[in-house]
Image (cartoon, rainbow over all chains, first blue to last red; front, top):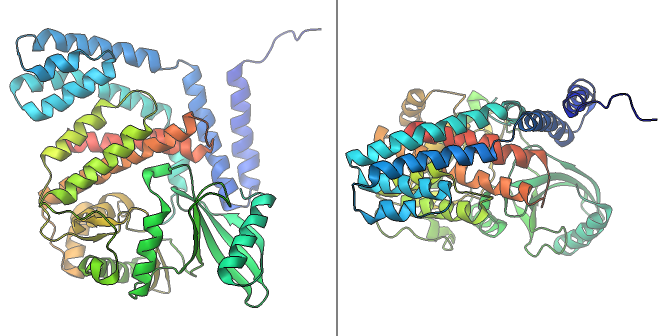
Length: 147
Length: 314
């Protein structure tokens, strides 16, 4: 017979996390196996976050929208650095070249470009850091030396 | 882990190097060190008896350095009397363990920070910066020739590592930071030998005595302030705040750190971290080695360095 209901992935992952954290980690004696087991807990927590919604496509769309916004404001400036950057197919390549151009340009227009791109990038950075916080904590706990 | 086949190959290799038959009776991986897999090995040798060694194995180019220069600089410094572990063998081909590695003597001591270990450590680091590298045979690093080369060579070195190992799209914040660092590179009056990863965790001590400086894979010729900035902002961050470190270093070793220049070198170290951490993500995503520490380095550790970098200069 089939199961009346299959457990969902998140519940199975939670079981793995709790078992690793409460049963496996305390009983592991070797330095490297214990460190690896602690990192596995953090890895599984990160995997759970990604299962709730993988961010790659959304990040790309947000970046593409920001680059399009930049296209509107740099159209007044004939400097080739802007048009070359905006000719990039990838929005991340385009944003990279735009920000490099900003560093070399230093004009008020550069500040406006940065004001469009930076908040998007900062928000993406903060969101991914939040997803990986468990992994970060596990890694930091095992940093030898500065304890 | 080291397989039984690799153990046999390693025993044969060590037998040749040490000139006697040795059996590797134990090889336990340490959690210390990320760029290399490090094992404490216990040997039983026919003549020398029980002997402890450290086996330091490369990991698919993780963190963008190789053992060749690390071994060369360790041997040169040890010969010059610096507290550096003796390198017993270097195997660059990967034929024995699948990756290049070297074996060094085991140095007794701890890497856990104590306040009493700090003075001898910073004095030794300052001594390293005063050393004339060529006079001790360190003539294999690229020499910063123009006044701003100490900074610019490092910016380009880590940029190249970052771009070569990139898994997916470039990070616009890394690209912008690289350009900021190029545009704001300071001059270096007198390039010297730089450790590249100094601070607590990367030196061994016992009873207040410095036993060895370890982890030389990032050594290069450059600006001594790069090392001081790394000590202050990375490995020593949890020990004192920046102002206290600056005052301490002025008092302990007479190093006067200009805030603006220090800020640059802190930024360069954060950028270097963000760049080299991406090598871990590439190795993980390409499934070359699926260790969870690589996932951590390639994601949250990279992001942490990038955030601090962006907060500092962008």
